[in-house]
Amino acid sequence: MRWIRHVAAKAQPRRFTRATMAAIHKAIAAGEQRHRGQVCFAIEQALPLRDLIGARSVRERAHEAFAQLRVWDTVHNSGVLIYVLVAEHAIEIVADRGIAARVDQAEWQEVCNRMLERFAANDFERGAVEGVQAVSDILAREFPSDGTPRDNELSDEPIIL
Image 1: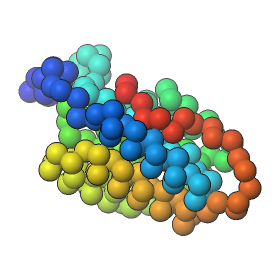
Image 2 (image 1 turned 60 degrees about the horizontal axis):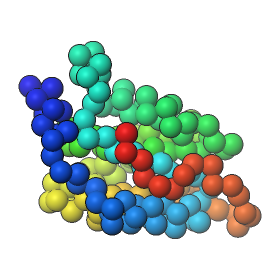
Image 3 (image 1 turned 90 degrees about the vertical axis):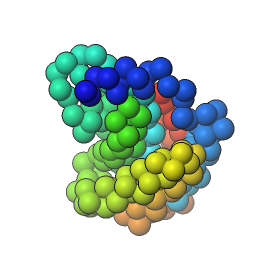
């Protein structure tokens, strides 16, 4: 049954419109002014066939995307990936080791749950933006900006996988 959801998801209209993608971009850029973290937002309509055949979990796929997108490759080990898998109505947040050591996975899961509530109500823009803002709040608490200019190591543009 899982593969049917993924095949059907590829045929569905995109839930993340251009306006929604622009709002996510804006929220990431604004949030990164308040902390030293790097936030990446990735959306995948459906898993690749190899992952379905291999029974890969959403969490495993999120970790693969984390590596593929080089979210781990930030100077301060401060990358965070918000991964959305539309076909399974699933969201995973993967944090680099510098952040994971300070923020419990349960706190990230709480952010995912709130996003899923908005998505279930077909409010993808609000859910995504509030999710980015919640991640930025956590990063601002744990890795506040010191006011010095820094490079934007990861693009603020949301990514479609």
